[in-house]
Length: 90
Image 1 (cartoon, rainbow, N blue to C red):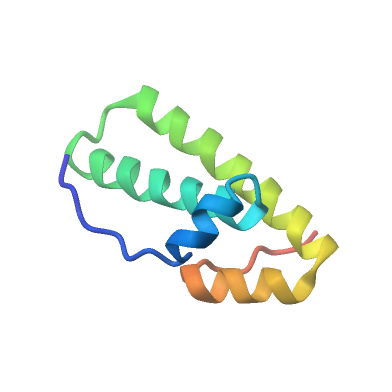
Image 2 (image 1 turned 135 degrees about the vertical axis):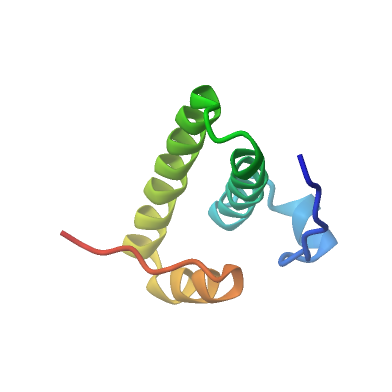
């Protein structure tokens, strides 16, 4: 697996205070998604990792939809900082 340094989007003091915040959880899921995606580029037939990736993507999507319903401004700011596409609403 190729390790790439990730730029911290949330400052260090915010990490210490707000580990349970939606933004921090989405940031952690995004880092995991990047790591698993780079792993899957090397190991295309690793189906267990694919399943884990789909589960993490679902968790992140649920958190983002919760945040978009509760606070649209924080949601827009977060997806812009993390370069995540806005989800399509049904």
